[in-house]
Image (cartoon, rainbow, N blue to C red; front, side, top):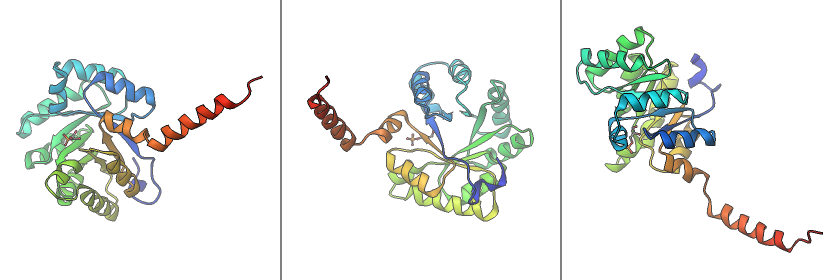
Length: 227
Ligand code: G3P
């Protein structure tokens, strides 16, 4: 990514799918609405499958960057897991929690050219630290902030402002997306990526007036003489 990303000259917004379900990822790819995949331990647990097996299958679909999250809490453990996941292929992005040990790990991994996604970000200053550590992506969790009566998208706005001030290369990946309004706001603010659950991807296409209008057109078409 060049340094223009956070200036006026921008790449198009990317949609990642927030899922470890290979079936959902295939469907999003078929829709042409999947530029990458994010997983986390909770999403992996839902599949009931071994993560190595799931990760290999996802990577084989070549969906773009695929985030795989480390679960160690110490630097050495994080680096060990990061190397394990990075060996699955170039598309793998190592997801690291936004804690002090995690920031150290991100710095080391970025020196090794291993891509990182700093997760569990809940404040603009945390995002500033992720950028200074050289993260490829930072994941502000908007839905979880909304859940505790804070404004998740206001956090994203401030992160974008800070990154643009200094032309940081870290991409803002809006996470914990719960509904289409989060996607709308992310797009209006110019966030680089939104990682979206499959259900919300489907909701984005829906509008009751589209369905009603289509029904009317089809009913009227029946009245048109065919010969
Ligand atoms: O992948 C991380 C994030 O998107 C989790 O979302 O809905 O569990 O807060 P949620």
